Image (cartoon, rainbow, N blue to C red; front, side, top):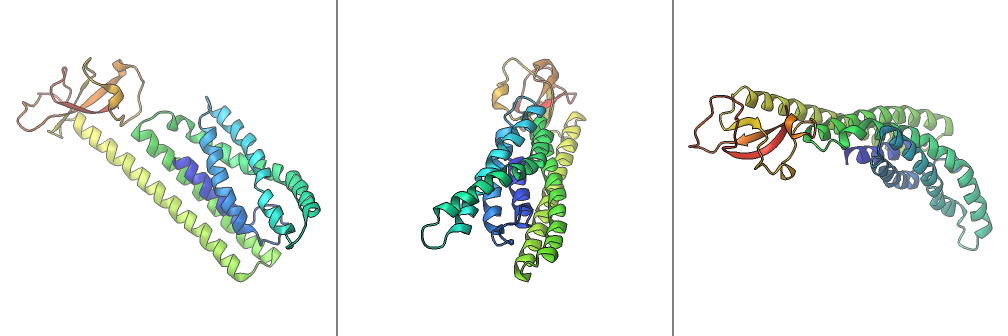
Length: 268
């Protein structure tokens, strides 16, 4: 989810910054930003279902080329609409969209594929820790892309003489994306740190209400959240167990048999 959201925000920021073939003088940046966001999110979300990182990257490039062409249809219709019949002009604009949309989509697909490849392993780990790691990577990716869009927007504003209002909005949009990215990075990092510290305290016996023990045959592992990454083998997993008040505490942080209530799975 985090990777797809970052992809949508980053692509929208780049599109609004004017990073596309300029046939409209920047007048359709809003339209392209609004179409780029869901398209990019869909590209990354679909690419993450690939079997490998390489497959995710290749799929992102392929889908970006297709959606790069699709994203030119609405702008072509807007540019050629004159209140009457403009079918011939629209066809011409659509042809240009295919010619320039495909390579532009491929260029956008490179960072999108990189994001999908970087987060692929974490997304498929299905743990809380992996989710936060994927969120942090997505935040870093969005921050880097937004910084590039920020400088590109300023450069294009001077070169193409965009209106001051549009330029100011583009700067605000990219700066907002950077702020959001930094917030995601900080939040994910804090969650990772807090989780690791809490698990360490449980392992050390400093949390009297919780213990970590080996997996028991009675544990319903499929129903328990996985806090940290670890092998899927039951031998390499451990269970966080909650001990209600009044239950006799164990002498060690590791219990050999189930006694309390299993609440989560951690890697050993």
